[in-house]
Length: 293
Image 1 (cartoon, rainbow, N blue to C red):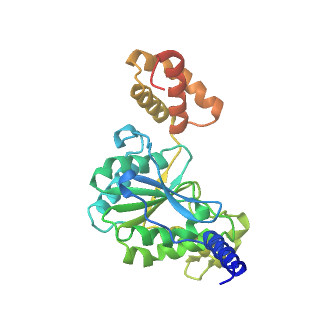
Image 2: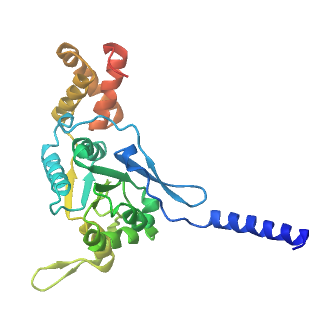
Image 3: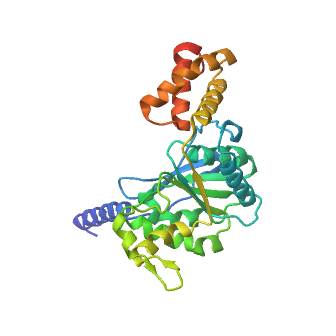
């Protein structure tokens, strides 16, 4: 073999290695012992990886106030899932800052010792969900695939991918996977006034939605459990504020003195949400209470 031929073969092997590295690779299983929560990420090369989430907020179910009905439904469904009983995919919808995401994290903290795990997937990466399911299917743990603030615009590829996943094929073959999603939209797609014109009325008084409306309803209907969250009243907002202040170390006297300021804080932000209550509590204790950072 001539020296020129050896160089050509070496260059060809280098080129093949570069091409192979640029091609999509099968999703590899991580070391599941590293964490109880994972985040699916796409690298610049297009390769997907499961990254451990090493620091999860220590929120507990008892920390969440004024959402008892919602908490009972989601905790019960999660408990059924962890115990190997039938359970549903869950869609949490409603007002922002009312505890949708916090409730899922609190369930993870409560049931992680029993084998519950969570994988957060951005809606742009939902087309890779079959690969994720394939990786976790043989694991003994139970996995919640978590999609936060989920909504779609017309024609986005993740919409049809999620719809096909929720049709039951995944649940049938992988009983250790459920999808939990939060959204501000009940039907996950934008709704327009003109779509109301597509409804038809029959002689017996029944109302039937048109094809456009049916398409938008069809995705949300594939979630077996719907849980709705509503804006808080002033009294509920103050209860939640007091809870967060107490959790940050405030005394009863400090809590009582802070409430008028908490109302002003909410008025300035135009919202009486749990998130606003938490932000006020951190600000107040940071300034006046010497609480935890």
